Image 1: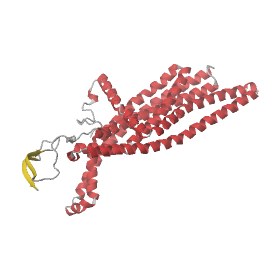
Image 2: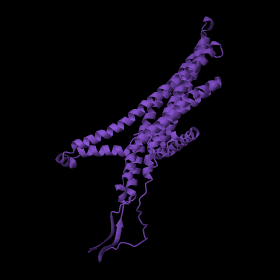
Image 3: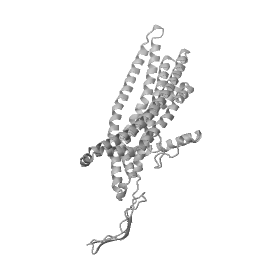
Image 4: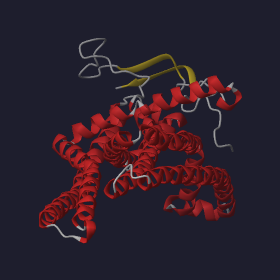
Amino acid sequence: MTSSPSTTNGDVPSTDPASLPWPKRWFKQVSEALRVMAGTPRVLKLVWKSHPKFTSILIAANLLLGLAPLAEMWIVKLMIDCVAACVKDGQFYATKQVQVLWLLASLALTRLIANSMEPTVRLVQEQLGDHLVRDINLMILEKANSLVDISVFENPAFHDKLTRAQNEAGYRPLTILANVTTMSRSFVGLVSMICLLASFQPVLAAAVIFFALPNLVFQFKMQHESWAIQNYEVPEVRKMRYFSDLLTRRDSASEIRLFNLGGMFIKKYSDKFAEFQNAHAKMRYRHWLINFVLANVAAIGLVVSYSWVVFSALKNVITLGSLSMYLTATTQVEYQLEAIIWSLSQLYQGNLFINNMFDFLNVTSPVVLMPAGEGRMVPAKLVEGIRFENVSFQYPDSERTVFENLNFELKV
């Protein structure tokens, strides 16, 4: 097994991107990422449709939480400058004392609002998640019920799509919802922090973003690898479940013991699981190495940014309050960027998997019911019976004919 197998089922591109020249490879990877992320609006549309009121509350709460760090930092900056001015030359100024008290009250109010929003977001997200999972599962059930041709239920490709859809329906939409929630909050916070840093030194803001970009690119790549290997292994996982069911179900217990087949199926299960675990272990070690390098690059960027701000304070370019604010803003930019990159990578992975559900919902039945009033109607009462003349049948996507030129008659 490899981490990015070549398939022809439309799930994973059949052309290996590594074999392409770097400009084409880069363009293909970016195009694929944008195509996958285009599925997010479909999920958000389902979220809004599930419960518009809860969705509106979630948006408003995340907007407040995203702006709260900027408000706190600004208040702390004013407070530090006020305290520094208050004790200047060893003197204590009553007017400054009142101003400090007002700033403390403002900080307490800001923190109170932010703290009250956190449990509100969790509550609304959980409630909204219940509605979303219900609606998606109903969509899958209604789709399965709408397929009038039962031959699709005997098609392995259909069962792969159904298995993928059922695997993702229970938690993937909730994961996507949680990641969108986190990302929207972090994005508001990031924009506010970058604007703050840019007002002091645009180069500093650009440098912080520059050091974070490699992490974003590699996180997307790693999530695509994770999806590719798991998506490819769906048939293998179904086989493991089949072996497990044979060994544990009552209706197969007697045959397994009569023909002494238990050891064979246990070995088959173990072999499949070993292949599964092997591929994942190699991928995890490779991802660990990439994350280790990227974490050190980010640390270097943070130290360089800190040094810039500290030396600006030493040269009296900024006040002590501004020093505290810009240092915190630099840390916040890195923190918010990490949160956004992680949420984007998880959102990307979620979209890769949730697209399996949409693939299932797009399944069509080879047999289509004829509209009412068209074709020959079945008589209310059979008089002579039913006669089959030269009837042949084969399953869709199969070249083998089950029976051919079948002739018989069922008399009343």
